[in-house]
Image: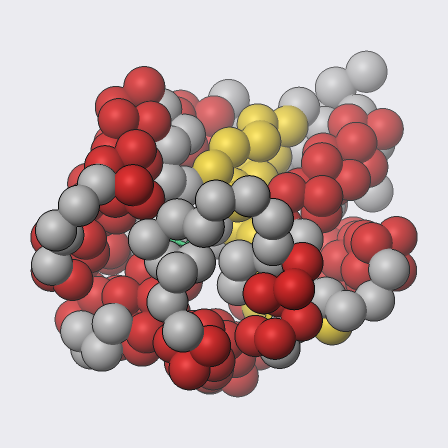
Length: 209
Ligand code: TYD
């Protein structure tokens, strides 16, 4: 049974290899078991246009950092307009695998384009839509790299120092606004990470908790 409950927007963030997709799946199951309609989505690539942009930004050649930042922002603008806002308007819980903070951490911190500028770009792109809760799955760069498999994409090919900058970028965002963030140790077993996430999420769930 789906009950009347306030819409909720949750972002999962973290480095490559931090286990976001596993946590997104566990979170969806947990929310659905509590009667919530869940839309699980991701950036880049949550829409048809986004899948085209994703291919270019992850596997295209010769992309300078500013073009890269604009492609992520374009994906986000379209994603929010066509998928995220309509789902929230229906009262769903939207769980997105990556959102604005990925741009701030990867393009702002990692690519050194400036965190404030990159945040401003995404705020413009989304009309200022921020998550109710952002979960940062925190993992050191070496452990995260060891967990990754398959052919690395453009970002995954960056050296460990880049990924440490990205990690620090996420942690700084969380430290600045602790009320809107949950930082979870992603080196723990997936079920323990999940338990920490839902402990933080439960109070936000409202009527059908
Ligand atoms: P992701 O889908 O998490 O990768 P995978 O499916 O391989 O686990 O993210 C793709 C990559 O895009 C990842 O390296 C992070 C990067 N990224 C940015 O650099 N900026 C952004 O704004 C977003 C959303 C992702």
